[in-house]
Length: 287
Length: 137
Image (tube, rainbow over all chains, first blue to last red; front, side):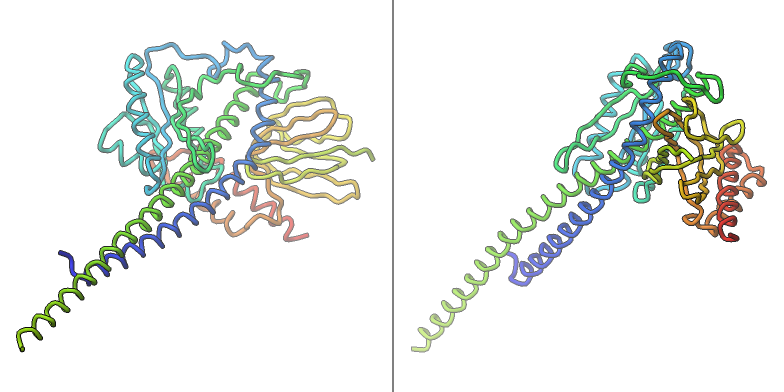
């Protein structure tokens, strides 16, 4: 049986865990709030971009543009996987990987599937379960900038135009609320103008005077902000998941501490009873 | 002089939203100016400097890196990747970035993305020029 001292040590350890996990929860909550503010700040930009694209798209025949037209099948598909840079956030990363494995099964007929991996966790996981990759990016979520999203978007568009996959997908965790994340699989390219809000005006002078070039520019810019938003969503979802995981851990620590305290008191009581019995026994023997 | 509303929007924030008399923007084939009553225009913007004049006659310059401008009868909206006012620019950092980019261009290493290095150089040079401009005035 564990000695009193052992139990006391464990109680101390559990207490520390409780404090650490509570602190981590607070940190995650603060980061979540910041990320949410940035999501709000990016909205006007994205909204305006979409409405302008809608009015230009109305003037460009959609089957002409390489980013609007689906590439013929045969060259495989591409997929962007967004995980986190860090762990300790519940099943956040594991869910992404499970969904990615299912994605591979679902799209067996479209093989080869080439991946673009985002986040240190994805890199680690797919080192053990190798897949074909054409790029990766990691260790940037802490200092997430628009430039990060822009760079990944540029890489993805370049690859789409060079290697002609028939579609580009993304797998990521969408931020639903502080207690819920939603796993999302979406098609990013070919870009479908049908998703845009209805066009309302298209009587501009174009500069340069080539709607198709303007469209290319707009789609690229739209991809940048879309990827940036996806990163922000994923980062928010990660912090929300971490908040929950840490809260659960702290609650568990409280339960565990109660159990251990009970055990400690029982052991102490047993010790006292034993000592008493010994004293009584000794006194009895002296008579 | 007539004025119209101008908005400068980036993914991180709305930098400016107010009435101006004139705005000058870096188009792909050169700078162009917009006054009140301009015909509807959609222009792709380059990396470059621009400026606008508010109704009391004060001019403000800004550095802009790529995007587009939508000119409508009811106002002008500039949607750009980044927009900065000169006083926000960290000249030391811009100089650092310029040196890094020029090092990348000169290194002739395999796997260097020359296009990216060149555009990084252009961005750094622009920010540097603009920050010097205000330092002098």
